[in-house]
Amino acid sequence: MDDCVFCMIADGKIPAQKVYEDEKVIAFKDLSPQAPVHVLIIPKKHIQSVAKLQSEDKDLVSHIFVDVAPKLAKDLGVDDGGFRLVINTGEDGGQTVNHLHVHLLGGRKMTWPPG
Image 1: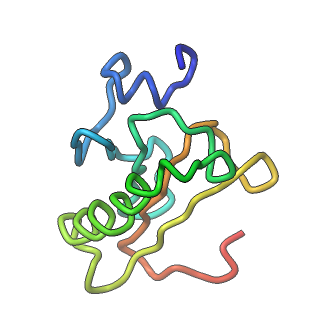
Image 2: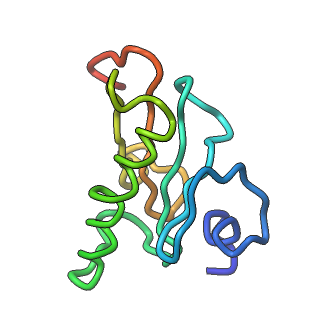
Image 3: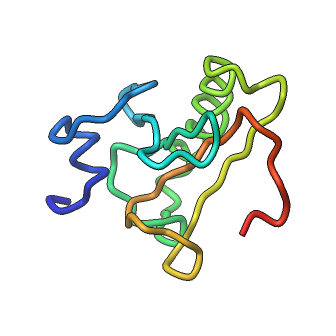
């Protein structure tokens, strides 16, 4: 997607503070952090939202949650104390960039309800 800011970050057209990258995903620091640790994990493949996932995306979703998120939590020092993973979906769900992304937040006590 030519006008998708996250696609442009994944393609290296827009700089970001990367903390992880592999052939399927990239993770980078959020520009407006809501916690001491706040990174976004995005697939390099453009997927608009959770609502637009296809069965062919199962391996990608598994990779994000089984491989990448736990590794990042450990690398960023929040695995022992705990962390939160958030996916906003659609306008009413708080999604502001129409590219699937997972927020990894940690480094402080999280409150409930979140918003």
